[in-house]
Image (cartoon, rainbow, N blue to C red; front, side):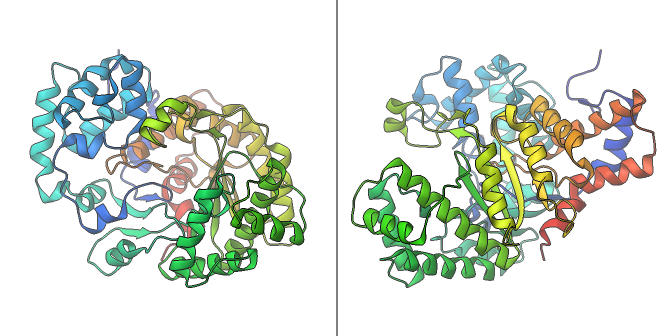
Length: 467
């Protein structure tokens, strides 16, 4: 019987061990999509305790705690940080076979050197150990990033963001490169008329362009797009329920924009047409600058109205959507490609039933202009666990070229989530190792080792071309 979380955790074969320890382990990390707070990195925040570092904003843990019967005051409420941590520690034993059990213990081991098991009995021991270390310089954000050999971090930022902390980091002696990512979701969220108009006021202020027409909107966004590029941005990211590719005319979009700016609610057809127009415009902007566009699709959000009203969005009430997106995805990509304006693209799906759809769709738009121009993104959100990542890599292997995959990202708000890169690397090496041991591929360690290093680091480095 293997011990839990030993040096060969997840690695089931001798070949897998050779690949991980000889090639994957220790490779630098390029985290090209996450939700880290740049202010915390710029100011090298001193976290006061493990709860502030680990549980604030973590809807994965909150969902598990609620499921375990923990009252809301210990998740997002008024309980003390110690009480919240204790309730989380008491919940951990109940997360067996959930990825949270792996992530929790990997983070404790890799960052804090704790080899035990977190539960109610060990909570105080872990709390004291972690909190003592958090008061040292090495356990501030920049030190924690260096600890895991993080080379590049790409945060997620609204077009109206000042990017002041990215600029501060770039002008400091911080050893990690921190770049913004353009996330313009609010600029096409016309389903909420009041919020959209409030956003237009803010966009007008930061761009210096009064947004009173659709043409004004595009000019203001291009102004901010240029500013993001000046601060080092090379990626956009779009959180969409599905791909939008309705037919529309320029006159229709101008009329729709006039209606929403006048405070008039739009029909569903008008909303879809406007989002389709905006998706096209964003794609054109990204292509002009040589950026990579990312699409995260397939979530159905804010399902619990009562708790959404009480706690707000991003607190753990989203799930997998079953909407069919193949035809609109094809139409959207083809519309840009037909004008030869399709940028490098990464598509992440949340519904595992769509794995083969995405894996085959990207193959339609590979044009030889760059290795792996079109990418099937790593298992995302509910799928960034062992089975989800294996299924994503198997689909990509069967339908495309796993060897050109740009690999893992954290998609996390927590500064100590970089153990997920090791988790991914172990899963990748185990997948390949099992194939070797089963005689499905030959044991050419030079070829396999290069493939592992490429997926862990070099493919992303070449694909994104960070300076």
